[in-house]
Length: 307
Length: 242
Ligand SMILES: Nc1ncnc2c1ncn2[C@@H]1O[C@H](COP(=O)(O)OP(=O)(O)OP(=O)(O)O)[C@@H](O)[C@H]1O
Ligand SMILES: [Mg+2]
Image 1 (tube, each protein chain N blue to C red):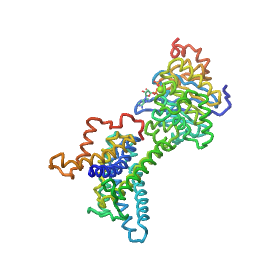
Image 2 (tube, chains in turn red, purple):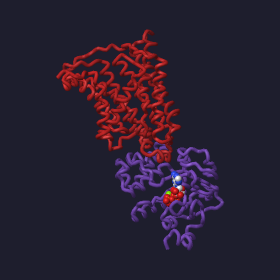
Image 3 (cartoon, rainbow over the protein chains, first blue to last red):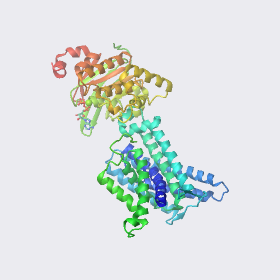
Image 4 (cartoon, protein in one colour):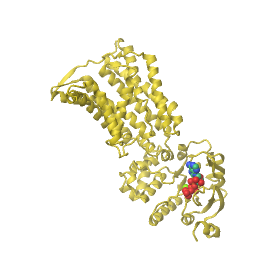
């Protein structure tokens, strides 16, 4: 029983991270119909930049909360500019091209970013210094750390804020309008290029926060960390119905839970044949199952929440 | 009521548009004076929609000029035109089905920054279109075709247009609804808004318009007062089904 609760907590925390990254995929897909395969690398860049800032400031005598805040602000700004530049340089010129072209470009951008990161930060696993005291608390027999609590809270706030932005503001309305009918949106006076750029920047900002979260949780960053994470978040987005924002959030949480519970019980299920390091298998099992049995996703079929 | 001395609000001069090798507009000329309601009629594929799209900046033109309120529209981005009072209700209406009726109407005022007058205009619109008021929280996609056309007109009005271009507002509507739509168009016109009305339903269009242009295969072949066009043998045979 204790382990079940523990798996659920771990899964929920991991799922919050997936959800934040999945939102970036789903927002861009909603507005452009493009799967931005470089999105996972933005998470990685966010983590790397945050690491560099932390390394720079950790011995400066600043309080750790302030160090964390600075690294958050800088990595979010860097990632937003990166997201903007990628859209401007790599995708916008291909907006009218056949769909395959920007997709291949996305893979190219992803490779470029990985290699750049490898040149800048090296190919080693890097330790992300524990800046915050990571006390753990007992919770009905399970253990929950302060970093985990922080991750869940920040994710809730960011996602709530995003939903408010998209559903309650003029900009959000314009985003949904562009997603549904770009030509009609232009006729309303919407600068679609600007709205698309903002969408990329919002997704990239969330990615940066997610990058910092995972680094703080696992204490390790690596130039390759974006690919597998990106693929899992993409799975979460597909699971929730790509293009659907609430779906991405639910899909992220669900995937986190499936992985965590699966990893917890895979040993028992396979009679000890498979260990918990097989947890990645679950994400891809989910991806393939959804694509085969319900390609529109669990919450798809209703495009009402697009954008 | 046209006042010939008045500078035209819109002046289209030798406009040519082609899609790849297809010459959709082969050099057309026409103008609209402030306050006029002009009908542009012609059979399928004549180039009516192309004309409106070119004016709205949605497609590039290869030759000719478009002047609107002393401005050349050559280098004006499409999304800036509504700020200048140029609004288009496109073929198929361009309704945002996933947005609520009210969100759609607010999108109509997207180019405006005068918050309090927008709120007033919204109330006025609800007064004029009680159906939309009743359904303001409903997704626009759930409205009937006629209601959607009304909403598209109302949304265009929310931008406070000086020139309103309508592409086949009667398309797909039942006769009763068409009558309502045309009544609304007439009302908008009496408010002083200039209107460029593209219609398959030539008789209805010419009945509300002051002047009309007839398009055939990318050219404007006839231009006259609406009353004369309704009487003309050529027009009656080709477009009025007499
Ligand atoms: N995107 C396009 N690509 C190629 N040809 C086009 C395109 N759009 C229109 N055309 C062609 O241009 C010509 C004019 O089309 P347009 O849509 O302007 O006609 P229309 O007068 O609005 O017709 P309808 O009454 O059927 O709406 C037609 O021959 C059409 O086939
Ligand atoms: Mg047409």
